[in-house]
Length: 449
Image (tube, rainbow, N blue to C red; front, top):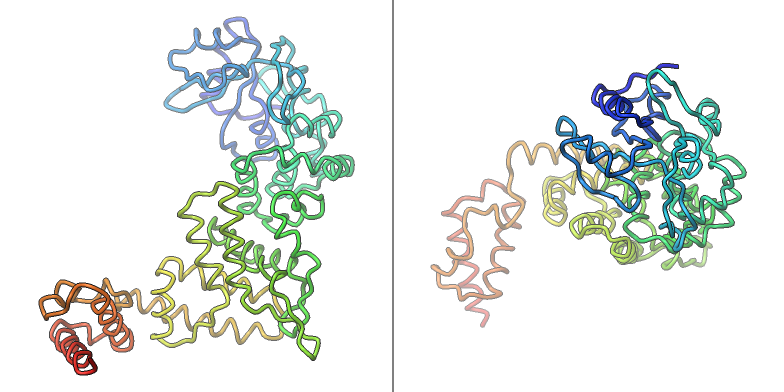
């Protein structure tokens, strides 16, 4: 079987081979090529030691020397080249106690995680597929190399990677691997928040973001986001819902466009419901204040996972406002835009649309009609550059000081009154009117004193 490797990769392989070393494209690149996809990057496995690689190539970076990896810069692109190796016992569920270089490519394949990632290829020699990776691709199956429990004890993150590959490739995790994940699930607590977050992001940004439920099914979620675990099985006994909280969240996530902030907001938007559930005299379940509790939990979870502060802030704004009913009126739209920001307001509408699509279909048409009307008004506001923020007023605090205002709270209060009037009537955003109106407000305050 012939695979079309990138020309630079072929040149790197040829240089290694003409100097007496074995060399192959390895791992995910081979998998992607077999599936008819273009690899995002190429890893190269070789019998050459790191010092040999550095000698053969002009520009290299020592990215992982203790694990046998050197990055070669070739035509301004970095390619990781790793020496064939066999790992010793793992001391912490991630790092091997020792690394032993080997000359056999097949032995190097033994240390890899899944069969679909344990293949190698070189033009002229063909594909090395010791563990049935090609057949597993045909069967759309995620299966560990060797004994699954051993693979997960070596690096517990591999359990998350199984779910990630399942989501990104639309493959099923095989039964033996699933049983091993359930048994080894507590080991995920050894893995850092940063590494976990990277895998969760890839699941959420895949074509199957709702495969997140697999973390619940496999017993991993309770150790990663226990607050979300509690949502599965939490009933929503009212006319607007047809799923429990966890399943509602999964359907909401699936209904969102592929957007990092939006999908995390969808995942977090109802996470506080189990803490806020109450039952009225008719047996109907309510979740009063769940938007605030969901925001609090989301911020806590995302900080623990070491997400960046700006992303956390944006997600928190969407979670807190996801249940706000925005009426299809220019003033109502602009006030919500001011609270969220124009960019996040657009995401908020998409989140609300996805949220409603995951509820009782009986009430969907009316809700979508309102959101579509709000979207039209929002686009008109942007197109006409209608003001909705204090910063968009044609006067500012300095102008009010010149009118005799003292620096302090009165200036902010006055500007808020003015923007509220301008939101209702954009034509009032002219200097003459605003200065006259500010003077009236100042005079009225003085009279009240």
